[in-house]
Length: 463
Ligand code: 2HG
Ligand code: ZN
Image (cartoon, rainbow, N blue to C red; front, side, top):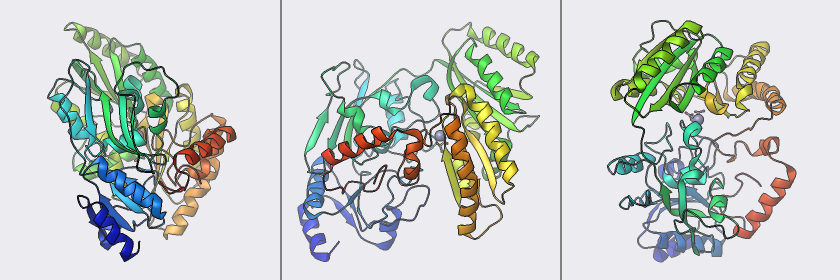
């Protein structure tokens, strides 16, 4: 941006903070994947009014804008590839009092997921979307990407838990969608259109979120298992268990080793194996415990799992959950990572994972594969590490060799190339694996209506 435009921008939004240092522009120009990007300038608005003025200014001057929150995304969804202006919502972090009767809360987009959880917990309620990145991720980003997380089996994705959105269009116009109503069958649902649109249509500034009651008694089971089919068998058993299922997560032994090294702590399972399942369930009645015990005895007799432990106390539950939630961070510590966020029909997940593993072994590549994720949603994460420190181009070439066989396999399983992380720039070339040409045509038409100059998060999802 020219000095003259910058001066005009400062004058137009005196209450915004404007950053221009190299460090800030780099820091705000990238997400957790560190896909190279750098913003031209970073603006931290203090209000919806500021956002409106900035967007109108950008539209009039044809300056491209990147919406930015906690930047914990994993698809390059907020990467500034062309020196765009990054508008970061962190200062807009107001939390209104919880509406106990309506079970909702109104918040600004820059509130972190964790501070929202803590706020609602004090009122005896919860926003049930739970993510490993909750300490940093922000509500605006959670909605813009329709975040998933570790409780999708029970509560679905972020879009189920919203009853109103305030957003700003690129023209600067502020729109209010759905007024917090529980029922509103009056035409197209623009609120739902904005959710998952990755900031390409408008910038979300506030939302009214739906809340629910937290679990009464929760039990966490942690099992070791020797193969993917055993995970599937275990899932069948869990589905018939005397409880309500909240999470069914899994990870490989290689993931556990990385996490143990990072946390400097060993898992308490006596008999390790190739895979681990972390299962979180809820019971409501006092006499549920004996039924759960009976179910566990039955499970052990069936020899589906190699070993197991049960965590009922909150501290030990957190300890087990830390093993799962620290995976992304511990892999990140080992240098370059390539990520695949896939979804297949859950009844085919074990077969798919067996084939994906066999493919990896057949190709015998000088890279390492780490498998983990949301087995209960049919949604594994495959991460590749550059364990042999190959020159970075060689690492990418090796991963690409795997990818070129993985994606056709995924297609044969009717899978998705992005289960929950979105498209951003990293999955853009593969959208047609999971969407039809007709859908893409409509995407482009919608984008044209919202952003005729193509300057709002340009190059994300579609070109
Ligand atoms: C998770 O499930 C996140 O922990 C991150 O979606 C997945 O790092 C990843 O690939
Ligand atoms: Zn995930």
